[in-house]
Image (cartoon, rainbow, N blue to C red):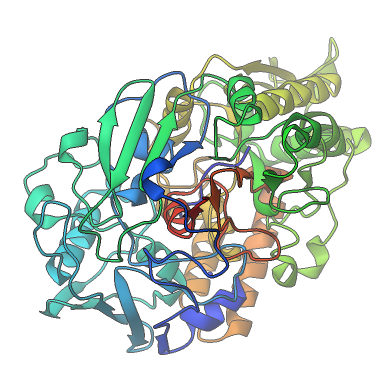
Length: 576
């Protein structure tokens, strides 16, 4: 199960990190204009695009894009309303950033000054003009409210607006490596949000969801949220005129609806996807690619280990964390729980293969074994002073006790969690699994640090960001406070230095050196355990709409992600 990408691979860094200027075009169509090769001219008014993003029993009326528990965040629908400056295709790290509210950008002053030109003529959905003031306000809001800065946007030293379509951002240190976080930032209307207190938790009702995006909230209910096209959208009229997000309590319920032709787009792990979904309507039901594993690898799924858990203090011991990694049978999870849609992680450095292959440091290539290594578990734990008592490893009279939390509605993750419990207990650990969570309560527990361990998809568009999500102490927070990253509450001077080295690198070689250091730290300290290469889940039907991304035309990563969903939907055309 892979859901979102929030928080540079060297190829992208070569485009945006080391040059003084970058994109004005990415070879894509204008936002509202669909895509070349789209389907027939059918009546858009007659078609409603039905999207199911993740299993949730009910929706909450909250359209705050800064709140990770809002409807938009949970269903990856934020950028239907609130748009970013640039978009990024994480499946093609060498593709230039895609202009959106931002028209072009240039770095100068040693990559410490960013000048962006904005699209002219953009209006907010309430009719007021969008301008550089809104951009400057948004970045200032994120800087003043760390809990709202979930993308890890770097702090500015100043932001100026020479005119309505120009923004100049200055930073204390080079920040080109963080351009994805900057460019992905969804811009908020100053005239509305300047009056909103506690922006990270404020409840924004449907009627108050004001954005520049192609859609407006049409109707809200706890079981279904519908959107209608924004008639004043700056990118032109969307061909898809209406979108529906129905609530399904479980993966199974969503799969039944998908197989019955009731859903056009989803991103779920479906057991036996060929027979369960594709074979029900081979002419219309499709996956990203026709051959196994059917889905592209988009992230590294890791077992997050809370290094500061008060209920599981043993997780603060690096020997224990290494032993946990050695005790896992990754191949069995890949086969039995993921039906080989997700392959076992093979590098302890934490990068995602094959998309990060060029960045993997040689000593860590293929160093993770697919099956459990009981001898290594014993060696690690006896070396750290643990002894076996009653079949359990103990030290100071305490077992290595912890709980893995993952919602039991996440079918594959819950299967993985139970498999890990079985593996670990067979090797002398004292582990349990707790599936009594919905997505919101699970996400809150993880981001606030109130958990022991959790299987979680990776985040980030580039190799650096994927490691930063786990290793960057500047993105974490004290237990009880919401963290933007480093949910495992890991902290080390080495990690801080390596992150800084990458961000301040002046060449691709220097960036690779910093990436090598980060991978080695991940391998040596194991703040989280790489388990699988997470699939970019994606199932779609061409019965009602055409123009979908495929392995032959991977114009965007189609797995659930707010910015990608907007880009994808604007490339669809209703069938006749």
